[in-house]
Length: 293
Image 1 (cartoon, rainbow, N blue to C red):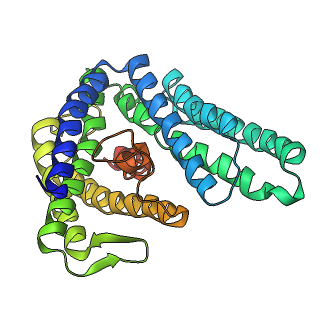
Image 2 (cartoon, rainbow, N blue to C red):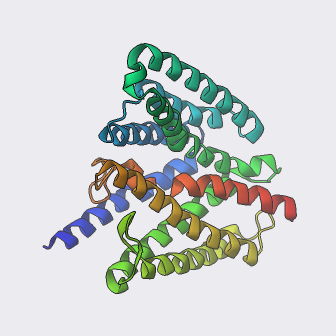
């Protein structure tokens, strides 16, 4: 078996286990989903701080990792965005002040205190604040008076996940088969224009199929086929930007993968890179469409 075939086998194995488990957790929702997402946020923040260390930075992971997880907990406690945003802002402000104090005593002027504070705060928001939108999307129908918010919340959360997965898979296979021209070689040498186009096509196709079978007739949102395709197209673009953004961080740190916890995929940041942007944008699109219809 070649190295490429071995990597692909490991990818499918992890996906074959992870996807069903993830769907079951999403269906269950509640604090089980919060625990799963908070764990991913904590692990992602830890990997990001390791990337910062590879750049000679010295963040405060013992402050940033719990903060990332706590942002998810806030979203689990209350599905009202204004309430979650208020508590998250208080946490970010407190985290900033605490890291400044510890930078003063533990880093000093010669220890790059600005880099340490910035990496700690930004890392926690990037890994935790973004993923917290998974909880807000899961409970979104409850804010609109849906007749069956449990299943509608499941459908609304699975939609951006399915579209992102389809876009990522299409880009992977099309890039290997037809990829010639590089998309952003200075950031990610493996990304190609063919892969980018395939990702957008895959996202639109997945959105159309998923929308037809699972999003039509929702009580909380009157989503038309045009709405679904619009969301799918935006997600297809944003997912690629999120992927490239994480590649930029790895490139700056001089590493290929953010970690090795997921065989064939790398680390948590490698696997969920697109979702760090997709989830907040998807929530914003749902709010926008909800106000327009």
